[in-house]
Image 1 (tube, one colour):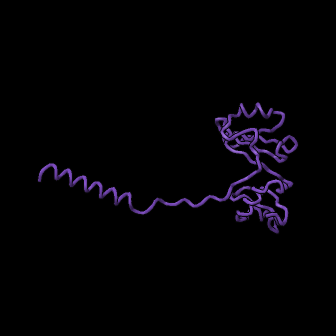
Image 2: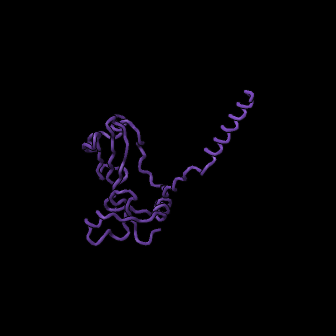
Image 3: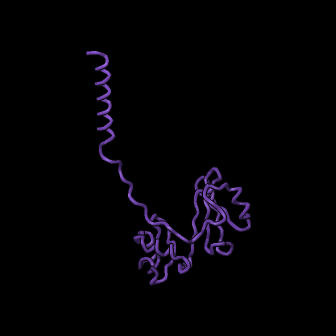
Length: 162
């Protein structure tokens, strides 16, 4: 056999191998994420990945308390000093980078001014965690929505809002 035939045969085998290897089943499809649209702006004056020094320029130490959080720190702004009218918790990692924020509305939040958020919440399947049941023997209060992860109650929704 001539060298040209070996190269041609090798090329044919390579092409067939690529077609079989790459043309098999399609890549796995990721499941759709739950709805997340909102018109309730909570991170107004700060953004995730912001440096703690820049954050503290906007929120002086007199407005918050600080506690250890893993290898980082949690800064809590009480309801009285909060622009959102809820308790605000900001989480910084060991490099002093903002990696999370939690807004707690212990008395609930009127959702009438937020039609996009109301629609989003109506599309989510409510979930109830067992630890909520243990703290409330009769189960969660009617109209109380729970986070899809294992977080505490997020918002109180007035009856009949959809």
